Length: 132
Length: 214
Image 1 (cartoon, chains in turn red, orange):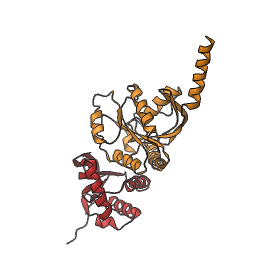
Image 2: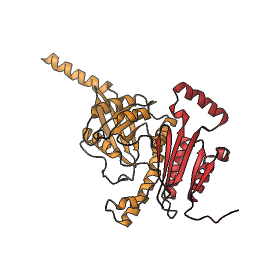
Image 3: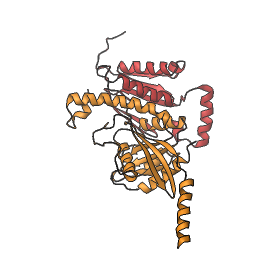
Image 4: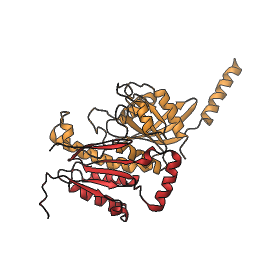
């Protein structure tokens, strides 16, 4: 059964890393921004590479002012490896090289017109929505 | 007496010949309103007697990359020449309506927002050209913002040495220990660009940062 999507509906898109693993960096950013422009909040298994995060910020800035009502994004990543000691991180990085992507991380990305703030501290992320 | 004068003269020449002067492109990065331009101005006032840019409590005051060349800083007999590169604050969102509460007119706010987005794109492009970067954080705010982590991560990936500066230590809510805990693998120094507090320690860390440039 499908219903007509109301603009007031909130959609959370759970994205496993495999959904974007085969894309190149441009493809990943395009896919993510495509969902954001549909006013969806993304919960991504894993995290983008730092270069991809920077590219995401740059592309977001290019869209602001060119897409009506688009004000940017809120983004935060949390990963167990943030709290690991150096040796553990080295072991983990080796494993990442072999299998690709830090799949133990979680990244939240939401459109700024929906998401007021994403608060991050080392162990948790809190997402605050704007009152509608 | 003559020997004393000759000795002093020879010492002066020795220092001018052998105290290394390097030209370092030093970038200032961080979120909007953390004090990047304030710190750059503090440095240029200390060593040139002039400001690099304008500051304001309204976010995104700096909307273009700004430069100051031939800033020679001296510490413990060593001189280093810097080209200071002050960048627009990096953000993931910009809403022109946020500027209205500062008394800016709607049309001007929209222009400011547009310029701010272009400034951020430019700041990102300049990352590649830096020899070393100072990442400035507001020490009274949560240091774990994704922007801070992304900026530092990018610099590490490019093998650009980083110094974390916690600004605004004059504020009651300032917590430098929280910054150090957030970035345990980096040197962190707390300062107040507004009052000039702890700038001596900042210059010590700056010279230490330059040694890491490959």
